[in-house]
Amino acid sequence: MDIVVLLKQVPDTETLIQIADDKASIRTEDVKWVINPYDEFAVEEALRIKEKHGGKVTILTMGPERAVESIRTALAMGADEGVLIDDPAAQGSDALGTAKVLTAALKETGYDLVIAGQRAVDDDGYQVPAAVAELLGIAQVSMVIKEEITDGKIRCERTIEGGTVVVETHLPAIFTTQRGINEPRYASLPGIMKAKKKPLVKKTLADLGVDPGEAGEARAKCRVKNLSFPPERSPGRIIEGETVEARAAELVRLLREEAKVI
Amino acid sequence: MAQGVLVFAEQVHGSFRKIAYEAVSEARRLADTLGERVTAVVLGSGVDGIAGELGKYGADKILVGDDPALADYTTDAYTNVLFDFVKDNDPGILLLGASSQGKDLSARLAARLEVGLAMDCIALRLDGEKLIATRPMYGGKVLAEVVLEGIPQMSAIRPNVMEIVEAARSGDVEMVAINTGVVKTRVVEKRVETASRVDLTEADVIVSGGRGMGGPDFSLLEELAEVLGGTVGASRSAVDEGWRPHSDQVGQTGKVVTPNLYIACGISGAIQHLAGMGSSKYIVAINKDQEAPIFKKADFGIVEDLFKAVPAIMDELKKLKG
Ligand SMILES: Cc1cc2nc3c(=O)[nH]c(=O)nc-3n(C[C@H](O)[C@H](O)[C@H](O)COP(=O)(O)OP(=O)(O)OC[C@H]3O[C@@H](n4cnc5c(N)ncnc54)[C@H](O)[C@@H]3O)c2cc1C
Ligand SMILES: Nc1ncnc2c1ncn2[C@@H]1O[C@H](COP(=O)(O)O)[C@@H](O)[C@H]1O
Image (cartoon, rainbow over all chains, first blue to last red; front, side, top):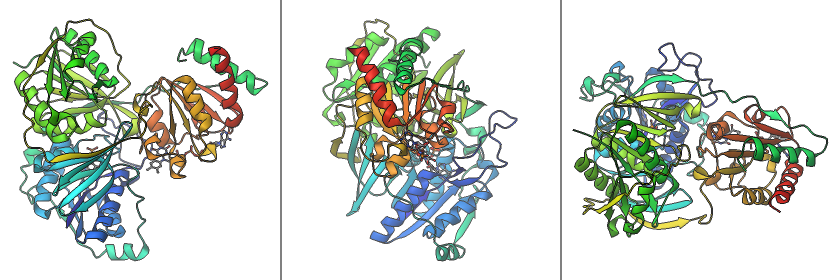
């Protein structure tokens, strides 16, 4: 089975985000880059499926040169091959542009199953996997916490508000991960050594036969005009009082009379 | 020419979700600014009876696609049908809710329509005819104003943020024949964990517990939530310990919540937790460590052992409620 993981490199969640001078992007100096946490679940799930059913796990990333590091990490976890699409013409792509590029690459790598994160924690977009599914004309199942593959069919348990539903579809299909699906393994030392020898190919849009006019900032249909910081919360008030009862009473009073939330 | 606001109103098992009212109210507000009409779309099976309700929130017209094949949400069927509605109505703006269903549906539909989609928006405004959407990025560390190309301009709004406004319209209901097209997915099972409980993403009050709970017994928080009409949430540490299910996790890799009141008990306030609850209207922190970062984000803090503070708050609330 050909399993492809869509992996994006994003700033570590601890990173202090700073707005760049153009007011529409963030400053990338001093950012620590990591695998999108949901994509880590995707890599782990791909490896488990491969362990069970056999096949090959390919990591597919569109991003700048530095993303090689994240692909290597996934290879060290156990993935077989990596593909990085690194092309300045793809920079600033929106979800649809990104999906067009990834789809072109998927047509080259081949795929029975595509696994992605439910969202990338940089743009918090929740869109690329659905767009890939649409362009490939395959089924998508989002926010999956459990899957089972039998006879060319996949059954996915997905989370919804207040419960879960189990959905069944035929392969090829794409699903996105939700926390709870697995605990990603760490790359072992031998894994890291092996990863250095695994194939990692770099491609441009031209290599994939994608017209540069199809992707990139100029073609983006969803564009950031302005970034700002959310209003600072005013520093909190620590409730003083002799006894815990007195402080509890004061809190309840504040919530009723000032905040009017209870 | 494209005109009007089309809004998808989500229902489950024959009742509208709160996000449906929020989306219709927001559609009304935008349409009033533009001097245009609001058309709501309801999809499901046996939903003709409830459709008229949307008039109360400002829908001029309600289109109903009622079919047994729409009883359960599937991406394919809903996308196929909603796509037809959009093509037939040619709206200038298309709104959905960014619930788990709405995120799945809006993303697929935007790709099919080949238009831009502003996902999980917390505010919308108009600059002439141009929709300007505000959406959090980087786990809420920044707010982005985004603009969209293509018609309709499409946005999915975050649950529990926009105001529900009653606007008393007649809301003419029209049944529309639908075609679900090719459907590749099938719902084989549904598990409702918490039928009686409001989902965290829709709750007005959330009482969350962290590692400071010291174990799986969250009954104290359950009680407090009950008295306040709220729902219990958890930090990732509490989930990792196996004390609470994954579905209770609030934060960057959990749920993003926007209640009126969030009470954090025994939670330190790590940046990934704040990413999930930082835009709550009021935050209360109960923590025995006065240096805990959560106090910097809390409107009100009590430095105390939660096992003493929470019962004291309960007693006080009981006095009030008599
Ligand atoms: C990629 C990534 C994603 C993450 N996603 C999330 C996420 O979605 N959600 C999330 O919550 N975390 C997330 N985390 C984890 C996060 O960094 C913190 O580790 C976690 O939030 C800490 O949980 P906590 O506050 O319950 O525990 P701790 O940090 O251990 O804090 C426990 C607090 O309880 C207090 N306490 C102890 N006993 C008592 C008592 N009896 N009474 C009162 N106070 C008491 C202590 O003073 C302390 O402040 C993520 C981390 C990473 C790296
Ligand atoms: N540039 C990219 N390269 C590879 N995969 C991506 C890229 N952007 C998004 N994805 C995938 O799509 C998921 C959702 O991303 P988003 O729609 O941006 O929130 C991510 O978790 C990845 O699996």
